[in-house]
Length: 475
Image (tube, rainbow, N blue to C red):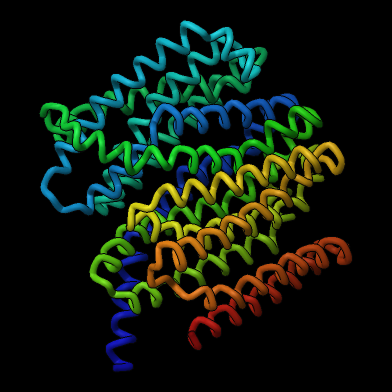
């Protein structure tokens, strides 16, 4: 039995990381390119204020993707596992119905663009450009979701990396030519590149989404599955982006720029979490359908070890990261980075349990939990940002993600009554990650010599990795 157990562990781990490596490489190369271009953006943009505005516009795009996209990608991913032979017809119905909806929304926004621009504090002409970017991004996301569901991780990698690479290169060129409002270079670049990519993918869309009549059962499936997730996604948006908008409101765009840079560096952790989750979900759905609970637990342990090792590295070397990326104007945000990273560790933890709700189609419960956490986050930000400044937003977001983790665990275990991954496997790593944060503060506050500090950090991170791997072996 022990031999069989080890073989199962090895097989599942290979399956996870076979696809996970492509998603990880894809996200590192695409989103990682964004991190690598941060030093370029920061030096092209004249001040943290413009960098703050660049991030606010990106936040608006993220919000509109949720609203205009109706979360159809979630239903598409789930329907792929229905195995009823209608996936192509399902895709065709969704693309056509969503196109009708988005054209209608674009007409309404264009008609009342002045009202929307005042409410969002965005130039009315730029608002239309942002909506176009959003619609193009929605269809690109749908195709990427199809690649993810069908485990075409290599194609996912190529498309993600190339599209983001060209967006970045064109953004830099446009920013250099603009004499003012240089931050708009990224928006203009996304319009052009995404439009070209969608044209290129049109042939593939036709092959996958065959020309069939609208099936209203498919539309009903999307509405029942994805519509309840819209509040969830919007609340997630608020958790991730409302803090920037509130900092801009209560403190200013300069501070928003500092906060945004620190937050973007911390989001390296989110890239890792999303990458492995992209590989984990199809495997998880298959094993859950086959009721192979012990195999799920075994893969989850390895998944957890990798996440906590990555988080430990990023936390300990946060100061070196911001020193590589930013000018001195941004350095004061360094002490926020470990908090943001730990926040994304709890994002990883709660996704482990939200996947049960996705599988059992209890999406309304996911939305309820995220709405609760989103309301808590906004309320705390409104209270503490005016009093303590932008650093309060990092702590309130971390607290909200902890609440979300607890809610989703109870949701899947006690309401859905699923046979979930044991929460015990996360307890020691959680304690360890907070200890790692203390190590970061100690080495950066009390050790002045740079080389001595780096050597101490290397020793500490080696010990931390050894402990995590030892705990994983003991199970």
